[in-house]
Image 1: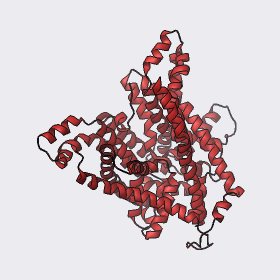
Image 2 (image 1 turned 30 degrees about the vertical axis):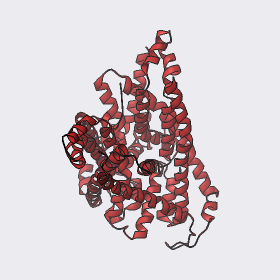
Image 3 (image 1 turned 120 degrees about the vertical axis):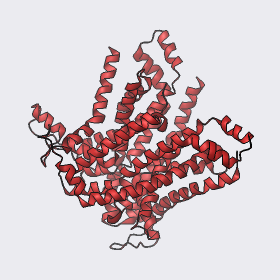
Image 4 (image 1 turned 30 degrees about the horizontal axis):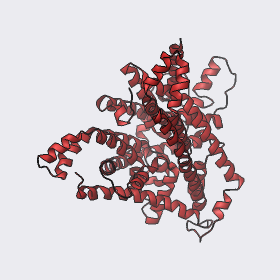
Length: 284
Length: 263
């Protein structure tokens, strides 16, 4: 079955895609070492200045904000996704499961623009929440959700939940239920079983999915762009601004490279920890 | 009691997940230009505008072209990638797996900007090619995963029997393995098509005005106008993807396509 001809036939298209991926990254890294020539798409010679300039507050504060927003999004996303993932795996009823899967996974496939626009309608000053609050007489003037970090994070949490639910559902489904039954038989209350048995057994999945969402949120663009409206900036918005409005390709490249390094770096850093957690669970 | 609280929590979270979609659909049939909750009436005016606005018609066509090419090519490559990484051991396999899955973790704008630079270097930034290549790279991990899951579940004895009866490896692949992989390939193709058609961030970087896809045109519209035309398009996209997901779930099993397990 291990036919060499099939291997050659199949490996070529894979290599082409791999080369394309490498080329796109290489282009970003190459441009990040090039000198910016104002008013020209052509870049100058080799320089490290672009890397120094991201230390300037205009860029550095945005990088910090990006990290903060991504972190908070990942944490809130975990808190909201775990119960859904748990219900999805453990429910006895097939139609409840289908409903949960469709409702929680479908938003993943409607795209960034549709979902961001939807949140603009929900959060806007004449949007759904403010209309409801004013109709109920809870507030007399619209509450400002748009152009705030809060608004951006709410939309980003919603944006990331489907992915996190998929990852956590896999983690919960791998739990050996004998451990839970044993704890329950020994008199542990359902909540105790959950916190002392289920959560520790899914810890590897929890850590892994939180970091994945952290990295994935770094990549958000439409949400901070439209809901942040220039008041809340993430690295992506600066890359767009510098790359496609100011045509400062080198600084856009450096910022892209930073986002890439943080995203891949955080996943790489946490991987040994996740592996250790998985091994500990497997040994039990 | 605990059970009741738990399902109340689940309901609240599901409402949070669903409210944006419901609000979009409500806004899309509201006759006035400004938002109103509940809607002030029922009108399909914004749908009519969405269908007649030239930029949306063009970008819909562009999106269709890009999606058809990208998801179909990605499905073919996805079969190749899943087969090669599952069935063969070779030097650099890990590296290949990593590079093909990397677009999942590389920020979208980094990928988009990278391909913008590559396209500029090759002088192809005004055509579909660079857009299609970018989309292939972005959707490939999803197809590969879908096919891979099917491949893991293929009963190897079927392949061995065919081989024992004298079928050549190529025949086994074409007559036994590929047909068994069909659900995974079709499921992967559908997911790739939906993701490609709705892809925004990377597309914003690699499209020009002539090749802009629907989400890019929608983005431009949102920045220029405040009327609910976008709500109409969004509602159509939400309804069609939900239906698509439902069909995938009924026919292929969404959990299997997305590789979620459950007991």
